[in-house]
View (spheres, rainbow, N blue to C red):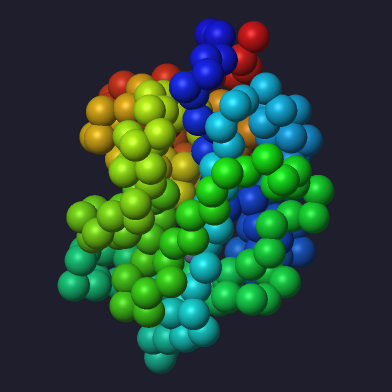
Length: 206
Ligand code: VGL
Ligand code: ZN
């Protein structure tokens, strides 16, 4: 696979709270940083996403008395996993990992900033209909294919990849640049769902 001038590298949620020591640490999450940095210099277009929640966000277990982190509840828009408080706007946990090369990013999409709804995907909030604007950005800029890396494979990367396919973009997930939360088999399920949807899963881009 050759990188083309109208390809986008989408770097998802490489933030301190998803790295070791963070509030919602993904095992080995920081291992994606050098992989992504090496990849990013090869692209003409790089976009970052940043999970960006207000305090007391409805996806936090702490906002639901008696609910445990990693349990699931039903929200008006469907099922929602409850998380430890993470990526609160303006905190160190919400900052990008200090080793991530962010200078070449032409856009940062912040998501999850509405209290009443979570947003895993870079394209739509968890109701699967409220857009972030990223699809319009890609279309208006003539970007045709989206290659994705980041955290976590089975949540924000998966949701972004499935939405990108649904929107008609060619979609590639570069697995060594991703790490998973893996809640009760969610990684295997995510891999299967992405394959089924026509997402290309690759180990490297030669
Ligand atoms: C994410 C859970 C909650 C992610 C974000 O980036 O995959 N997961 N918020
Ligand atoms: Zn979040």
